[in-house]
Length: 557
Image (cartoon, rainbow, N blue to C red):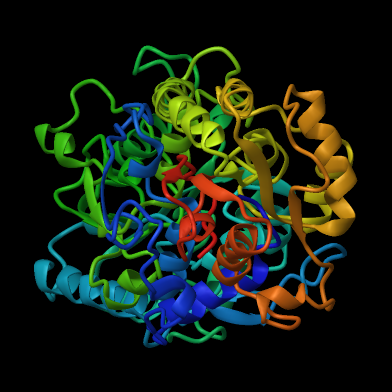
């Protein structure tokens, strides 16, 4: 089910930041005498996923077992204490506001500060002879969370380059003070970043501005210069063997591990500690110890190199997670890496849909297999129910949501939007009738209709999208949907129908459940089943059976 999501997601974000309220709406809580099950509808709170060091994933068989990407984002915003503020990026086309992290008192800040204390505890207060510490840059020295938010967690090199050239990245909490202290204790400081050589001077300027200096102020002697900050320019870095892992492309581990080896051999230092936010910053050895900083906002996988320490085998993302649907898990997290990683979740989703370049496979995928089994099951259940009810003149009906219930939006969600909802772009797809059918649903609709059930459409799309929606449904093979039995939301600011009793403001649950009640009471339809991809499509009762379709690509509470 797709609708304009900004209000719902902002509400979920507010819940995640501390206003944890349970639903009290009668529509959500009251028992439904026609419902087959009294159990409340709720999203899962525990998940299992397997993402390997090299980025390969075990494709999940069930879509609702994947952490929902919108819930993940709400959880991360709670962890980072992120709230909307003025976007540091002032370029044309940049949003006026963006989620900015709280870098002083958020769970993220506390997590990082605790790890910094552990670094100091591990290292002698006086550096051993030739002792050195190596740091990554992004999400290790410089916070790039707000940059990720502006990019909607979908890497955009042009946007990222503006942040780099403008020196817009703030320091990671406590890092300038940590490096200043290590420097004063006699440790040689090095930086190794995946940023290209063309961004070296801007990166050095940003670090100096943020206080990575001998005094902790922009006016102090910089701790980083071109001599000890390594940017990625393998054409001029002969010590990097880009085929060491059997692949000619230069991996992150090849570049970073072999650069650490080069530093030790060339400068005669011994790297006592290697600090980074990605496992690929740390794999490959050439450091006596390592510290992993939290970063659940993206995942940069890389195959390890031959001869890497045995301890590298533990450098993997967790396989089990706990996450509440309202995002509140992030607000109480003490370890950011125990939260589902946004980048890894996207990999899981794409594996489930067998998607390439944002386009789902139209022939074979775990998603298609799950839909095939689900629609077969419900065809067999509903066809005899429709026939029996029709013979008894009970006016049986089946209610269908639209987006990701009858029409499939994946290619728009991923390929066109990068999992960041854009209402203008969504309307372009709607008016262009670009959506294919959800696998198996055309056949299911035909079978229940032929068996005597009226098919009803109930969508969060607005009335101005009605004509195009009905044409799209006919275009992909649905024959039973009619204007008479299709319900759309009014345009923004317009009143809902009087029978909904909610004026100009209906929640999704109110709108859909009260419309189903209207179908039963006024149109005398007996709703034998209600199909939707969101729990809010199904809550509030007024249907004998509730059928949830899988959809990890967005969440509408």
